[in-house]
Image (cartoon, one colour):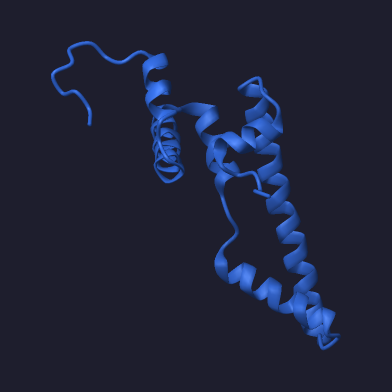
Length: 127
């Protein structure tokens, strides 16, 4: 329980010590809250790069793309569906390229590597 009578703010070291005592669920909650706070304080180019890096393709797009890919694997695609799949593939690649460029620029701006940045942003795949 926090000491509400405390007059001076906690130091970063004290905060880290307190965070170190948290369990995995609370630690994850704190990490997300810190990321949200940081986003609110980020402005300009960095904010725009973060927005682009965090964007996701629409669910409807993903559903249709997976459906067409499944049909392709099953060799049941029509000619029209094949053309649609090619168009969606181009769109997906362009979208991913934008995100990677934003992540790379953000990593440069923060003077870190891409893997570290993606972990910090919660964008790295686990496992």
